[in-house]
Structures are given as C-alpha cells and as structure tokens.
Image (cartoon, rainbow, N blue to C red):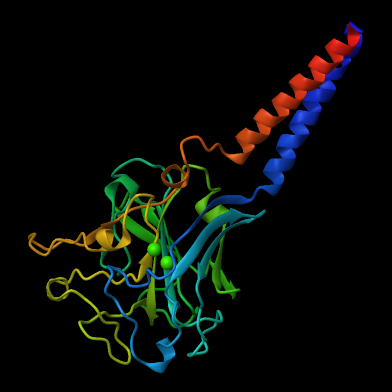
Length: 303
Ligand SMILES: [Ca+2]
Ligand SMILES: [Ca+2]
C-alpha cells in the first residue's frame, strides 16, 4: 500500500502542476479597475465644448481600464460611457478621445520621467515612468504628438519614439491598443499605470478656457489658467482612497515657477486589498490542498 501512495505522489504533483499551467495559460488579465461614472469633469468643474461634435454625454468618462496579454501583445482597454460618434471620420473609428498611459516598470522612486505629453500634469516621482503610450484616434493626423510608444532614455535623460507600433481599434465603447511585448516587455504584477484621458485635438489635448465655446472646453480655474497649469485631463484613474478633483487641483500657482498638479499611478498594490492574492498563488494553494486531501484519503483507506 505504501508503494501505492508513493506511486500516487508524482501523479498528484502532475495534477497540481497541470492545474497551475492551465491557469497561467488562460489568465491573461494583468490588471483592471473600474472608474466612477460622472467624473468626466477633471478637477470637478470642466465642461465639454459646446459644438455638436461634443454632444455625447460621457464621451470623456472612463468606466473601466484593463491590461491583458495575449501571445504577442500587451492589450490596453479603455472603456467609456460612450465613444460618441466618429464626427471627423478618424482612422481608428473614434475621433474624440486621447488616452495617455505612463508605465512605471521598475517601481523605483525618481527613476524615469515625471513628464506628461502636454497634459499639464506631473507624474508623482514615486511613479516615474519608463514607457509612455500615446493613443489618439488617427494614425495620420498627429504631429506634433504622434501616437506610439515612448521609451524613457536613461542615458540621455530623453525620450525615444517608436512610430506606428500600437495597433488601435475600438469596440463596445472601448478604445483598444495592442502593443508588442517585444517593445515594452511582459507586464508583471508590479507595473503601475498613470492613466489619463481628455478631448483630443490634432495630436494634443484640447484647450480648456474659463467658458466653453464650440471647440474649447470650459470650467478652468482663472488663476491656474493664467499661470499655465490648468490640467487638460477630463478623467483619470486614481489610487484607492484618493479623490480625482483633489488630485487635479494639486497644482501650485504661487510657486516660482507655478507647478503642475501631481498625478499618481494605479497598480495591483494600490487597488487590491492586502489579503487578495494573485490567481496563480490561489491556484497553487488550491492544488496543494487537493494534493493533501488525496494523500490523506489514501492513507486513511489503507488503514
Ligand atoms: Ca469616470
Ligand atoms: Ca476618474
């Protein structure tokens, strides 16, 4: 009987390992989180331009963000209340939204860039990024801010651009961007994402004024506007416990020179309760428990 138990052990281990590999082969979501509906007002006061093209409520309102992988790509999915129409016939099937993602891969404070591409925001030094994704509605309309992957160049304290490396499409009120794993690496549970959206305007964020007009957003703070630090984001993801309006009002107009508001990255660490374990860990624990039960059953039966 002892021999039977010994013979069963490799089988059980095989079972456990196959369970684990099955889980890792199918669990492609790396990170996801929801965002409140109705906070598409930046620091709490922003309104859409008054033109008919901007008449879809919720077109700048994130509801969900997801990072997943398939065999060759890291897939970023930005879901909105609506994408609205495609009023300008842009190439990727949407016209209005401009998405920026600043990825902190190394999680070393101060390591990387704190800049954003024209959002009038500064990334928290704790979340300084190595890779930025700039995702607009058309491949051909974009100078001076082309779509693409931007990689921070530590040696030159500069950025390198890779054009055309993001495949962009839209589906079910989501903008979907596929970035080759060969360019940005395989995401880990550590990666942290500073995610912002706002109205796109030919390769940059659309201007915000005090009052909106046909093409200009409204609701800016007078002092922030005069100091050049009014943020141009309408909706951002914030770590659990933070408030979007507070974050987007964290500029300082009295500093010399005035400083942008500081935005923060979200990650598994900022969103998951401390007790929540990754799926792969749960699979291992589950497999071990099953193995123990099987072995115990065999031993009990033997007696
Ligand atoms: Ca939202
Ligand atoms: Ca938000």
